[in-house]
Length: 415
Ligand code: JHZ
Ligand code: ZN
Image (cartoon, rainbow, N blue to C red):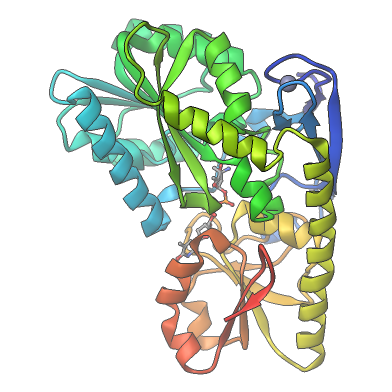
């Protein structure tokens, strides 16, 4: 990549060129491109953010691929600040341990291991663990947490090297990372390289059905190259020589799906009926029709009017509004809806790496959550709406003193 991004013309899964552009979120900086105060005077690089639907296999995707080095080498997102995330990891590990009888002799490898949170749960079963992640700053943290980690982007070449060094795994996990991977064929080649013959591969990613149903347009950003329906994903899995042998829908991140895979075999597959059931639900919801996506875009524009209208009128009445959660999705929402410092005084966030910095594009300052005690707003706009319950519980005192929360989607709500 000699430029810092490239444009793809073919569908990531089926190679078709019939890509239908349905949503244009304009140009904006990468969603985790937080900046220091001293850099604010510099022009920040923006990349187009538009979303496409493959009329052949149904994959929803971006065609602009920003160089992963730019997006992930120095990363600010860590999952361990949210209780809901940790509970979800614990549940995944419990399921995997039951299925594969994980113990001292087992090896678990996590792709996109971030700060090692997920592997820390596996470690309690005395198995060997290894994380793989390209973020240099975050893998240091994982090592400090006692999780051995290879700092590298995952593909078949790095997988081969890792196999030579550590051997193959009984379980490979990849949570909230598959959507970041441009070359899915390479990813599966890597999994094939690293997974024992009877090993399982577990993934979790936000589910397209929920994204469409709940109008989660702000989860569309440069890091997320694919938005999977089960239909499109199954196609990818099968062309790579694997099959889905477990499926569970999850509430996490506004609705996700956890899938377990094994190499194609003649063994009885207990997940077959569940998979068929959801393929049918996707048909009924018309996830395979471009009209569905046109309707989605229309609703996003209506939401823009509704939320900005509310914020403008609250500001006119002299209210102070603060954002909650400097999530990547929050940066998409504020950029696309043009909600700047004149509307949000600041944003609070529990992630130490984001505090003291300014949000990409809108330059809104990010502070620790305790700022709310001395600088009390009238309204908190919950940008990390996927953790709204956890946040509202934490900030119960704010509400009991008359403060109000605004939840931006699927429809604007004041609580
Ligand atoms: P959160 C991330 O998206 C990034 P983001 C990534 N690209 C991905 O794929 C998706 O997740 C799935 C803060 N917070 O998780 C922490 C509080 O301040 O929705 C986070 O900065 N207080 C890998 O960035 C943010 O909110 C709290 O009590 O959109 C949430 O970000 C809680 C619970 C969270 O992800
Ligand atoms: Zn396709």
